[in-house]
Image 1 (cartoon, one colour):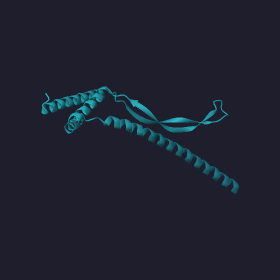
Image 2 (cartoon, helix red, strand yellow; image 1 turned 45 degrees about the horizontal axis):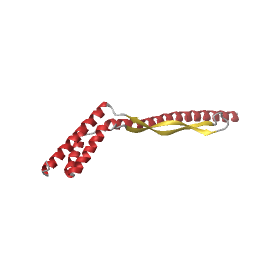
Image 3 (cartoon, helix red, strand yellow; image 1 turned 60 degrees about the horizontal axis):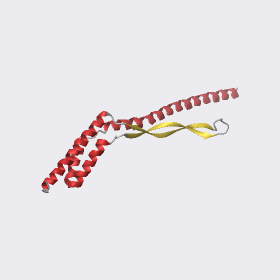
Image 4 (cartoon, one colour; image 1 turned 120 degrees about the vertical axis):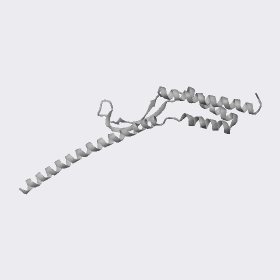
Length: 160
């Protein structure tokens, strides 16, 4: 009788342990998937939050022109040209799971699936119309600041 009693106790203990293991796997898998999705969402949110302050950029351009008379104007013209013509594609990285294969001659393809790994994949995000419009406005401001500063310095040095 003792043998059957110990056997039944062992069977029940084994079943409870198996249920606990399965539950733990389900919970940890859910937590892992939740963690792997959140950094991508954070990257998109920070991109949306990082709007440029055009007036502050123009103020820095004026300071650059005042500190370096003609070279500063050339730098500001170059910045304006870059803002006017450049595409401004933002590249961010997101994490994807890709299958890992192991060499195995028993399979017809010569490899068998061996699990998954996380891989950083680059994703390009093209600017919307609002961003393009802001870049054009900033470029026009740069051109204006540079031309006004060049005319001002030419008048000061009595070249005109």
